[in-house]
Amino acid sequence: MTMATSGEKTLAGEAVQIQATDYTEKLDAAGRSGLVIDARKSHVCVLLLEDERAVWVPPQLVRRYVPGSIPRSHPLGFVLRVLALFPDAGAPEVKLAAAGSSSAADGNRITIPHGAMDLAAIDRVREFVGGDLVSMTLAPGGMRRLSTTIVWKSA
Image 1 (cartoon, rainbow, N blue to C red):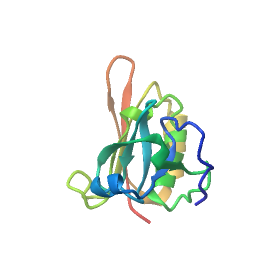
Image 2 (image 1 turned 135 degrees about the horizontal axis):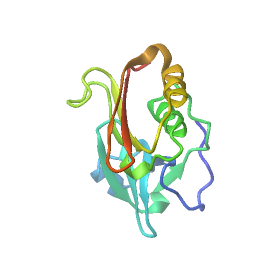
Image 3 (image 1 turned 90 degrees about the vertical axis):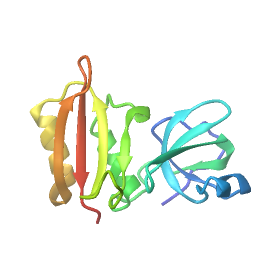
């Protein structure tokens, strides 16, 4: 996995790694990877995949991954590729749960709120996940919105 050079603004939906400092050690987030769900001027909110929680850290403490450098076998790489199949999904609304957690005992789980979805899009998601797919559920998510929950086995 390749890291991007620092100095560029971090945006919601990007994959990052949190650098080790005393502050991030106290948050138990040092060296962890996650998905930026909110980016503000003074802090970014990073959703950590392993323990279903988000932490706020200063932007200078995160390093962005180069897009496409995270392998599909890594849970974060898998999540980024699934999110790409939902062009109108908002990163701040995504919910993740790692396998073995109380809310994802049967496998990794991602819930993605999004707009309309046709059968071809559903087939693209099912084809991408392939044999690792445990379940895929579509549910109403509000006015003209759907929520798709995908559960997949870890590689």
